Image 1 (tube, helix red, strand yellow):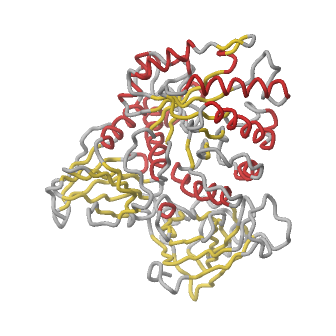
Image 2 (cartoon, helix red, strand yellow; image 1 turned 180 degrees about the vertical axis):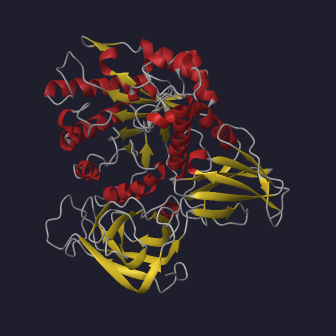
Image 3 (cartoon, helix red, strand yellow; image 1 turned 90 degrees about the horizontal axis):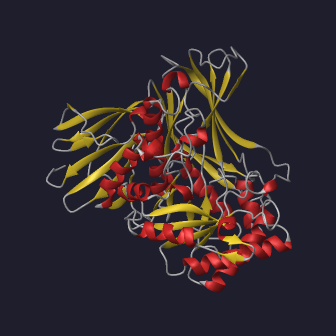
Length: 563
């Protein structure tokens, strides 16, 4: 059931679900089918010792980022079980060719026939690979698979080695001027800003509310002037959000002629106020696809405002960087419709808020998909992540983690927030952002109150410690890129200085356990900054057992260590 990885004998699916059209479309208007599949009936039953730990590992390559993969297996009872294949990984999206992925053979997305209970029975008699375009309709392409292996468990081994290839294409060497934290304008105290800077952030994203700076046609930026002066003391710049409506111009988004004219004048005044100041960029609105911020989430109406606002800002400050208001989640249909308005042509990047319930590393496939959608409209825009966070409340099983103030929930938040941050850095984005600096309320069960890196009284939460630990290591080192030869669900980033190399290593699936081998003389730190003990192994190395819940670790390899 396996072959040489990436070999010429790889199986290829030629996928054309759009009847030969090379356009990315919102809906499928031609009856070309929902998916294509290739199937192999095995000559004999392949037994599965333990279905609860069994994993199907394979290498996949999709020629188009909108193509998705599905695995089907038929068990000894005649039951068909269907699983999603994670088509893209951080490694394959940043210069890798094939993606090595692992599909646990438990919890299928659907099942039918035979025992029909969703549990793999005894063994496998047939395998199918399907390719589809579950979101937008994609142009023709190929979906290739190779090196299919049935593994008894998700335990893998990986050894840190300075000779391992690194995916360096497009890697941005430093986080300087990119590392951003969102904050509320009323959390801009000296204590909060000092901690933001000490954690390694250089930008703070915040609203510069229209209704706070304009009253009866008069503009007053005194409050935000004080904020900029306070930020400057700590080397911080502001990423201002132009938001939202104004009661003197009606309610909601500025869609009437009068409100639109008022908003454009407000944008000009913000541009004039920001000129020559410690302001990194202006973002026009916030989550315009979200009805909470723009009634109806109309991309055409928003696009019209965006284009006019971009022009108004350019009249005052032609060099000011401007981005769109980041959509919530990754809504490809909305992004396509917005791109089709032609109003993204003069922005400096495409902003996105890539919230998700899936693992943070799935952002890798989203960056490729967004670039493809934008590219279909002739746009070659860098992706900016301008808001992404994770609350310590409302996300986790309270029986295991407690409420949002529980130490267990806060530790779990820290692990995932750090992975959010690493997922953005791994995609070489010009702006990486975490939401948010401080908790916005005191209710331990309210998700919106518990996104902060800082808690009550601006006391650091574990998430703050995790980000600071990482940024402290990265600040004095040059980012080289993702390590290319890692097992499925394992990720490693390399950072170099004149004296050492630091590897950030983590596991992205609860079904994978890593035996991490590090050279003798290397040290390992947890995301909390504490030294981790390793055990002696063969060939002069030491080993650490690492699971998804342990979060990222940092392996420091001095240049004096030979490998």
